[in-house]
Image (cartoon, rainbow, N blue to C red; front, side, top):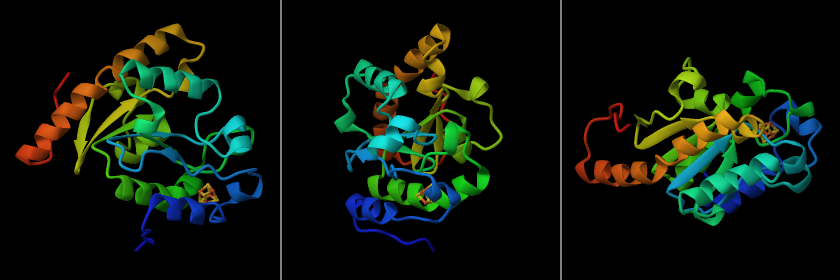
Amino acid sequence: MAQQYESLDALSQACLSCTACDLSKQRTHVVPGEGNEKAQVMFIGEGPGYNEDQQGRPFVGQAGKLLDELIASIGMKRSDVFIANVVKCRPPGNRDPMPAEIAACSDWLNEQIRLINPKVIVTLGRYSMAKFMPGDSISKVHGSPRKIGERVVLPVHHPAAALYQQSLKQTLQADFKKIPQLLKEAAKIEEAKPEPKQLGLF
Ligand code: SF4
């Protein structure tokens, strides 16, 4: 069984010295993730880019600016949520993360999810979607929430993909608008404790 940590701080500290995959060789900083350890909403992106690698913080470049806008559009702040990535170190040249790297890094992400215990997980882009919905296509399932285990997972496009595509940005904005309602529904599900099922909220 993967190691369990007492707190997110302890996890982040340990993660800073991880060398479990080759991405450790070229990184400037590990980017474990940041935010509210009691967040009801957790965002999971793909991996750090240039700016994130330089600063050791997730979503601080242009895509991060858009993510901040999207979070604000649903009446929340970065400090209300938790933001992490599927891989915690930058793939060189911003290439896609490899399956072996995602697998090597999954214990960190799984432990973050366990510690935060969010009601809603919003996956940003296809790599984090694939963690929960392997085999699905982001262009087909984006914006369709699904009950997976204890949580609701909402797949949406990655903000970086929407930076230069106005139509995708509008899609992302529309998908984000579902989050407040999902939080309300998640609270009801918690009260009623029904069998896991796919939600047909929208
Ligand atoms: Fe470790 Fe993840 Fe970084 Fe690979 S990407 S070295 S598994 S923290």
